[in-house]
Image 1 (cartoon, helix red, strand yellow):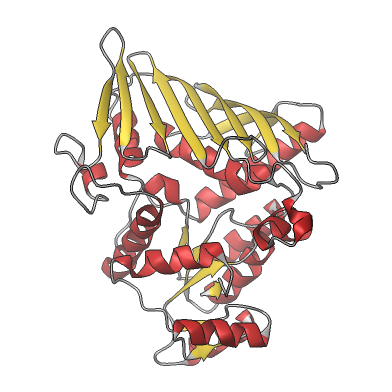
Image 2 (cartoon, helix red, strand yellow; image 1 turned 30 degrees about the horizontal axis):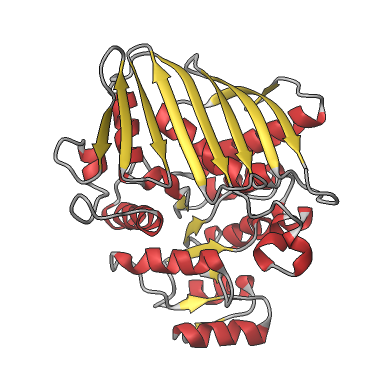
Length: 366
């Protein structure tokens, strides 16, 4: 693991996920660039091989007979590209937190390095691995909604309603710093999750965006709210609203998809339920763990119906599926890849450009 030292939220999440199904063993880490902190963090986790420099770690581990096979990158955004490239160049598989990189130029450079490497890459868009999200995707692909017309996604939080980054809060500080977060704030942090979810379930991608980004907190350099109109490749249209300054919202990620036959609705804060509405019929509430669901949903359910599964299990699903892909030399079509991340960076870049140019329609992959 690179990053994820003491006080790091997402590093702990990834460690839980990695060991939930006994597919991984954490044996080495560059958990901090500060040597003392790196050692303390490694000692606390029982990691014997600890480094304070990721380049040194990549070089040393690639030369060991018992060296690491996979690295998990849980650093701020600006380090994703250099860390990933260091390990890919040495043939070590990469698991990386989203967004892919801090800038589109970095994403393109990383893509070229990955293309020349035999190593594989996983981007941890964890919301795509919830059982009822997999069920929704299967229903869309199976034609149960008919021709898709509208995709609406929103992700609302309230934790940055005030200038928390000025209080020394580590999680807020790097997200509000362009040097660490990249060219976008809210759009890159949670908007990227919302967009990937919309594309994953809708089985499409946006071809054009029209964005209006806001920085409501005085002095904040990056956006903390986004309103983005979307035109999708399959002809559908949609809207993405992401906000980290919406009082009363904790982690309110919601998706609604409507076709000419039926509609679907899913809410992350009630993840075990999917609302399915056929035109002219009463709405149905489909529940995780039941035998009427597809294999796509059942394969990522661990416990019987009625027991809550959510955030940590979704991360673990990605880790488990990636391990199976590596061990069995198979391809799992539901896993977010480097291509997913590159398109995501194109979306973020297009959204920022659109907003800076008075909400101009911008081609995503142009």
